[in-house]
Length: 291
Ligand SMILES: [Mn+2]
Image (tube, rainbow, N blue to C red):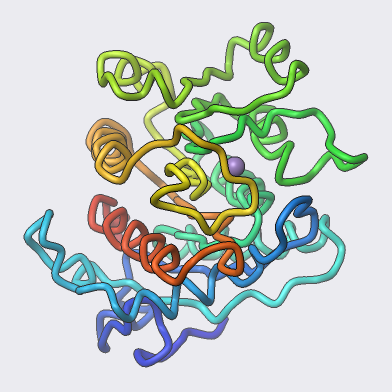
């Protein structure tokens, strides 16, 4: 396991706050892209977020504190085996090691498939686990283009492991809609329903206390987040998303998180900055695991 030095790590955070031993949070860049079907480029997402993160102020004006002081180390980007099965096993191993070291894993994708590895590791570590899935897409297909493990099936595979709440969803197939009708352990809320807190806040309480939080960056509206492979109109806006994340962090124990599906070639540079700022803001909301 290689740790990036301050000039290359997330946020260019100085030592000792970016040292592994000091870290409450470990950023894990996972440039995995194997099953992308529309615009290519999610493999470049982690490095684009790391580059842009150097421009994010380390003082958080909303929280009125410096989140980096809880310790944020960054691993060197994972070098993954070529087959999806082996790649997921390698990611899972890294997440498990991070949890064993009493640190909160924070993956930067990469395509959404990487989430499955994070959920497998967290489920075996914590036992009881729920998933909160922020995404434009339901990702509930049973298979997609012949693949059972793909960005389009990730919540379906994950929901076979633990209960899930999808938020901000605004695109699905008839197969996914029918599955939702029959699967009580998977609940979704459309983006249009998310504007009223009374609609979604009670859904959180139905989940286990320990949460894996996955954010497909396309949950944001394309006007704010154009750099995605499969944009959908009608998405969440910045402050709506922060309100939801704050509520999750307040009512649940977020045990691990990821931000996936940034596709730098599909949009302007500010999109990478938005993803980096979202990551840092979320780190400010996250608990520090007991060490
Ligand atoms: Mn999506």
